[in-house]
Length: 288
Image (tube, rainbow, N blue to C red; front, side, top):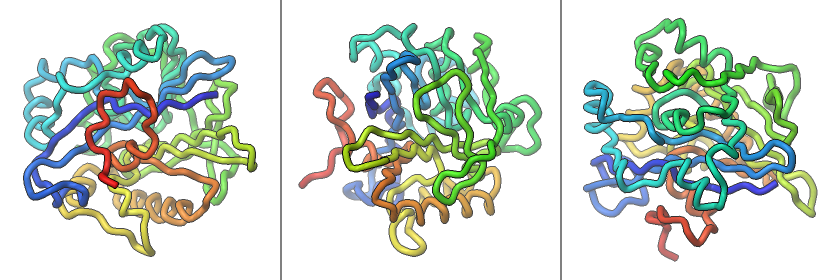
């Protein structure tokens, strides 16, 4: 099994250091959409999140205005998940499974590019789309799945992973991938745990989605977050207490040397994993 870390969206919100501590000055900041493309032995390609992809954001005036003003996406300058698949020598039809952390535009907008893939998502997340209970849940965009994806909803299981309960496997995926319920940002927000080959024993990669937005949130007893980014995560949350509990648990897990945690939007998490020479989005690599 081989894991590729790819950037599937590019955002340049205003705010500089108020958004990202690694930004220079107070102008634009950099935000990425960190996705995973996994080559498996028996399950074809598995994609963790899709970025914005082929969803026509510009066709939706409300979404285009909100996303454009707050996040300033650079759609023409980023590489879609489908393009990353091609650059690695595969075809988008080789992606047999898509595992989603949640259904926000910047995580599931690329579903339309993989119409034949089985889409694994938390049952609670799919229910939030179909039967919204709050304003936040009415912000999903049904047109993103107008192609009628092959949904495979999963519910919390009975297994444990470290100190996390409710762990479950994904139907039809034999590779060691597991759903780790991390509600808060959305009702069915889910972390994706991947067991990696290691000569020194079990080693894990956890894609935590939007459970945190800046690496600094995992550092120290309470963590820190740039003020504008902190404000955004509060506005975007479905449940404040669930989000805080999820973040606190991740902060403890981050101390375990056997687990590597990444989130969706901090360039620092992406940059320390990028190795592919073709990767065009190595724009935010920190200076030595």
